[in-house]
Structures are given as C-alpha cells and as structure tokens.
Amino acid sequence: MRSKRFEVLDQRPVNQDGFIDEWPEVGMIAMESPNDPTPSITIRNGEVVELDGKSIDEFDMIDTFIAEYGINLDKAEEVNKMDSLQLARMLVDVNVSRAEIIELTTAMTPAKAVEVVSKLNVLEMMTAVAKLRARQSPANQCHVTNVRDNPVQIAADAAEASLRGFAEAETTVGVVRYAPFNALALLIGAQVGRPGILTQCSVEEATELQLGMRGLTSYAETVSIYGTEQVFMDGDDTPWSKAFLASCYASRGLKMRFTSGTGSEVQMGFAEGKSMLYLEARCLYITKGAGSQGTQNGSVSCVGVPAAVPSGVRAMLAENLIAMMLDLECASSNDQTFTHSDLRRVARSLMQFVPGTDFICSGYSSTPNYDNMFAGSNWDAEDFEDWTTIQRDLKVDGGLTAVLEEDVVRARNKAARAVQSAFKELGLPEITDAEVEAATYAHGSNDMPERNVVEDLKGTQDMMDRKVTGVDVVKALAAGGHEDVARSVFNVLRQRVAGDYLHTSAIIDENFRIDSAVNNPNEYLGPQTGYQISDERWEQIKFHRKAVSAESI
Image (cartoon, rainbow, N blue to C red):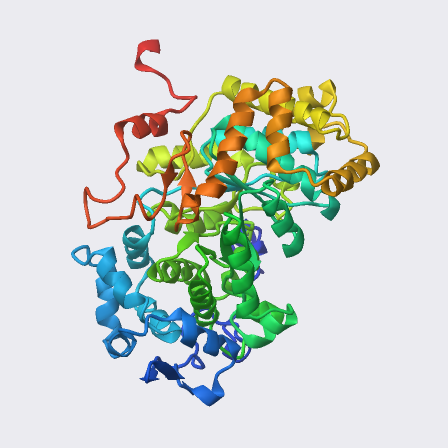
C-alpha cells in the first residue's frame, strides 16, 4: 500500500524537476566546497606573487589575469586579513555606505568575496543588493523572438515590450542568417512603444559585432567567460581575447556586458572540484579586470545545474551580489526556465525583484514561451499582469507598467507599419498588409502568416552586402512617413557618438537622458533613502485594468 498523500505529491509540478545530492569532487556543489581555496594574497613590489593559496608559478591564465587587472591592490593585503564575518555585517549595515563598501570589496580576492557572502542568508543578501546596486533605480530587460524569425512580429512585440516598461530588448535567431532582419525589426519596433530603448541581437560574436558597428544594435551582453582555464580554452578564448572584444565594442560607442553564471564549468565537465560560486567569482573578477561595464549573471542558461543542488538558488543571488561588490552593472538573469513549479519560479525571482537590480530580468520573454528562442524564460508574455500585480501588492518597482489593450494594439500596429515601410524603402522583401494586420493582434507566431524564407534570406544577404547602416534605417523611416520613429532611431545612434551610455548601468529615458551609476548612483542607507517610488510612478503601479472603482459600486 502507498500513502495517498504521497501519490498526490508525486504528481505535483515540483517533483517533475531534477534534483541531485552534492558531489563536490566534480563541482556539483553550489557554495562552500571543501575544495575551495582559503583566501590569501601576497604582494611584492606591486606584483601579486600569491593568490588564494597559489604561488605565482602555479597561476593559470585566469589567476594571472585577475592578479594583474582584477583586484585593487592598494588595500588588498589589508582587506584580505579582515574578519570575513565583520565584512559580511558591513554589507548589510545601513550605516556603512556603498562607497565605503566598494573600497573594500574591490580589494578582495575571489575566494575572499565568496567567503564573505557565504556568511549571509538570502534575506541579508537581498538587503546588501538593495544597497550595492550600482544605479539608483531598478529596470528590466526582455527577449523579443519568435520561432519563425518573423520581422514584422518582432517589431510589434518590441513595441509592446517597450510600452510595458522594458529598458532593454534582446533578440536572437532560429536561423542564423535572419540576424540582420531581426536586429532591424527590433531596432525599429522598440522605439515605437517608448523612445530610448536599447537593443541587441545575440548571435555569434563576429556577426554580433558587425551588426553593432553598423548601428543596427546598441549593446551586447552574450560575450561568455568561464571560471576554469580548460573551459575557456575549449572556446578558443582567453581573458585577454575577451578584453580585446570588449574594447572593440567600446571603441565604437557600443555598451556591452560579459555573461557568466554558476554551473557553466560543471556543465562543461571542467569544474576542478570547486564550488559553482567560487568559479563564478573568478568570472566576475575577469569581467572587472577586462573593463566591461558589467555582467549578465545569475546562472542564466545553466540554471538547471545549480537549481538541482542544495543552496543553488541562494548561490545565484550571491553571484549577483558579488558583481555589485565589484561595482559592476548587473543584469541578474531570471532568464531561462528551470522548473515546472510556478511557486518555485516566483520564489527564485523575488530575491532580485524585491531589492531591485540594474536589470531584474536579463531575459523576460515578451512573447509566449513557445516563441522564446533562448530556450524558454522563467517569465513570459502570459505573466505580464502577474508581474505588475505583484508590484502592486508589494509596492515594489519591478520595472514594468500595466497597460490598456487599446494602447498595445495601437503601438503594435504602428511598429508593424513602420517596419513595413522601412523594408520597402530599403528594397527588402515585402511585408504585406495582411502581415501588418496579423502582427497588430497576434499573441505569438501561431497567429502569423508564413513568410517566404528563401526570399527573406536572400534579402538579409543583400542587406549585409550593401552595408546597410542605422543611418540608412533613419532615412528609410523618414522617407516612409515615420519621422517620429526615425528621430528616435537617430537619437539612439547619436548616443554612440556621445558615449555617455557606456557608463556603468546606463539606460536611456524617453527624452534620451542618461540614467546611470554616474549621474544617479545608488545612495541607499536604510528607510526612506535610495530609490523611492515617486507619486507618479506609484499611480502607474497601482493601476490594474480589472480593478473596480469606488464610483462604479
């Protein structure tokens, strides 16, 4: 006989997830592996000759890079001798400012940073995140993709996403040769819902850089780095090659973040027996040393690995916190789906949602998950009103805004017509009126007519051969009668010349003013300090389209 209760529990969504006991020897441990090094650093004549238990002759290329570029050596020996519990308490002490903390945390070694955050429970980590986030105001980023790489649908979905409040939008492809069209459609559509949205197209690095240099994207973040030498070498990369790539983006006025996360090394089979968090800390020190604006981290696409072991979701929050301790912009994942349980996926996100991060999600799917080409997201278009309702319930700014159906329909239609006009002016394959109508009201690609893929791919190649740039897009939009959208695209391109949005945690508002850690630094010091929801913003958050007004009763 079986317990009827356990028969019921066996059918619960959470028990469809995968779980595994800790296995330190292969790195299947989230935090505090017995194989993690003891924090230490020795400096002679300005050179690090010993780091986290390794002498200089034992350094691998990651140790060498971190020792040379990743640590503030002025205070390093002093800070690494401090009691880790004392430092952990300073992280959460509202009487110790962020500026004071950053002087200390940027002087820590990777092992020291891991030891410090390991003293904190998740509530304490959330408090530290609220204080250490680089930019005062939180924001959000979305994915805009579909299984058919349909450009008119991407434009319409991007317009809706920007109307709903996303500050950045990212696309990728099902067919790699569609990348130019996806980037073009996203660029146009995102400026319709709200001017000033930054966009990117995540593809292989050479194409991604080329699209950026031509002004078809405005930032990049899928530049992956790893915490062990063998995994780095498997990708034919080194910390120096990634630093060079970062400088290529910056030299052309393109914002960029590195991507890393707990679980990637064990997933690749080369974790060296270290904890996932320690290896991720090494990645973050590479990010700092390379001069990148910041990181997309929080396990990201490896989320199923740390989520399967004890304290794995805690480790994801800890890695976000370490990024902030290094004064980096942090797009804190809440990205790829990892669980069948709605309760578990919301719990995973609340730890960034409540204190706020620079980008709470680095990939909220603005489409239904069947259209998400990043392997599905923890949140998707069908959760929009759950998200805004939780904001309303908690009086928390999670970066999104409730909207009316008629406003969404209007924005989607305008974006679809704008991309239709741009395609025509640029001599690209036709977007029909029927496609515009379908995109205006579509939920996903199942609601869209099919396009001629062969002709589209010829068009993408022609577009690249003719070296179409962002300026050509501006001209095409203006020639087609979409002057306001053209002006917005032009103003995004102008930011590339000014370079101000290369500042840490920079986003652009609807008036093309920069909001960053430089001109709007986080100054949280406890109650009624730091980011406070304005009266105007609270009215937006309070709005619920299903709410009954007192006057109607």
